[in-house]
Length: 191
Image (cartoon, rainbow, N blue to C red; front, side, top):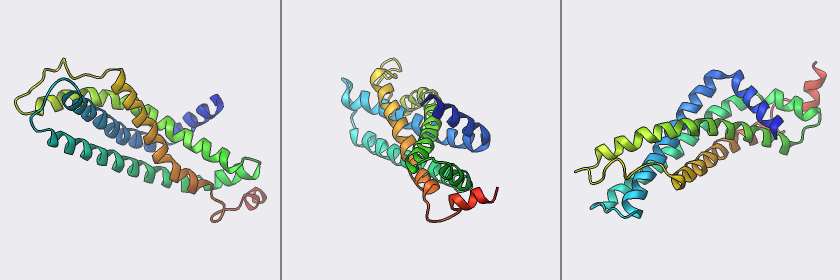
């Protein structure tokens, strides 16, 4: 597993532009969702009351949709990178790597990318909580009552891992399929 993590970090480092763009997109999606969930959690599920709870639920649903669009955007970036890496996957397959091994490696890369973005997303969430509380009408709560705690950090971790898997599964399947693109043995013969 350590080898897979090192390889994932090296691979992400080879394409710093794509890594930076995907990280920013994921950080904004994860951070916004975490911030919104923390406000909704405190106002709807906590001991504080909010007069128009439908607005908060609608806003939470909108943030879920934004997170879904974030996954789709990052998946399309990873899909573009996967199409470039088809030859690499064919060579690795030709020298003995199984399809499940290649899929696992690509999923680890997307989860590492999501994890790095999740850390940045926590910073976005901290800023987002302050902004959301300031936007609430008549400011029914103080900033001290809405904060990230262990439960919300757990939610952020689950969102991060789910985002990593969701945005990486399609590119991993695409990059490792054998029906189209270069065939493993023809790649080795060309060298």
